[in-house]
Every structure is written in C-alpha cells, then in structure tokens.
Amino acid sequence: MSYVAYDSSRHCQMCICKGGRIMVWLMFMPNDLIAHKIIEKNFRSADYIQILQKTVVPISKLNYGNNFYFHEDNCSVHKAKTVKEFMENSKINVLYWPAKSPDLNIVEDIWKLLSDDIYKSLQFKNVWDLKMAVNNTINKFNSARRDDLKGLYLTIRRRLCAVLEKGGEMCK
Figure 1 (spheres, one colour):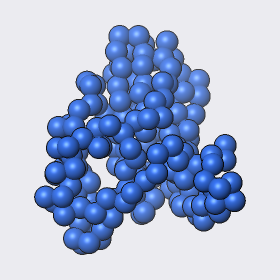
Figure 2 (figure 1 turned 60 degrees about the vertical axis):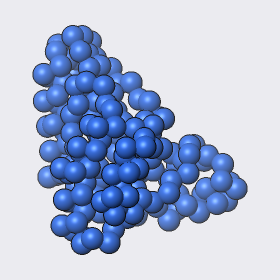
Figure 3 (figure 1 turned 180 degrees about the horizontal axis):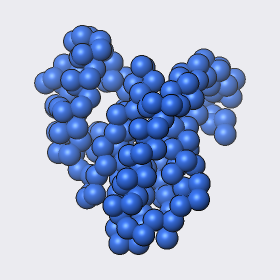
Figure 4 (figure 1 turned 120 degrees about the vertical axis):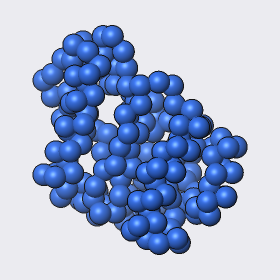
C-alpha cells in the first residue's frame, strides 16, 4: 500500500510505500517543463546544493543568462547557512517568498496534478514501482500535458489579486 504524505513546510512531495519511501524535488520552469530528482534518503543542505549546482544553475543560466531570479520556498534546507553562502557565492538572486503562502505557489497545484495521476488506481508493491510511476507521470506531463502546466502560470495574476483582496490572508 502506498500513500502521499505532504509536508507543506518543506514544499516537497514524500511518497511512501511498503518497503521504503522517496522524496521528489521538482523545479517548474517558465518553458512549462518540470525538472525533478528522486531522493531516497534524508534531504540535507549538501544534497540541495548539489541539485543547485547540477540542475538549477545550468538550466537557469542556459535560459536566462547570468541575471535571473530563483524562487524557492522557506524549507529549512533552503534556508541553511551553507545554502545561503552557495547562493551568494554563485551570484544567484533569490526571490523572497513569504511564509505560509500556498495560494501563490503554483507548485502546490503541480503536486496535486501529479499525485492525482500517480495514485489514480495504483497500489505500489515496492519503491522501484513507485519511482517508475513518478518518472513516467512527470515525463507524461512534460510531453503531453504541458498546456495544463502552462495554464498555472496564467493564474498568477488572479491569485495575487485574491490574496490582496484578503489582506494577505490565505484564500483556500
């Protein structure tokens, strides 16, 4: 039996099944694609720095040059001193993100779309099957469901207005 455990303070998806668990880190890019990494151990700041070095920085610099802003949530790993030092040394501009702001974060909606697709009728017997389902679903979204993802960018203005109308309070 498998289920999704979501920790909103970490903005990552934890998938647990009999025999183990995985964590899925993802980056949603303005070209409507999802980059992701599956992690089978505790996620630490050194792991995050490695993802930044091998994934975020190269993809961002390739698409935007050296002057880009990176948006991340307030996960404790993201706020670690070593991560902040890496960001400063790499001259990565980090966009400030207010705490407890899921109404503005389209990644929350991506997690919902992905987990609905992954768990629509499957029960996973082992971690390998779960990993394959996650990879296959993300590949499907990247190839056949990019319009669903693109639509999320189009909702940002409406989301911002809703939060402003609520005086900064959560809308959902």
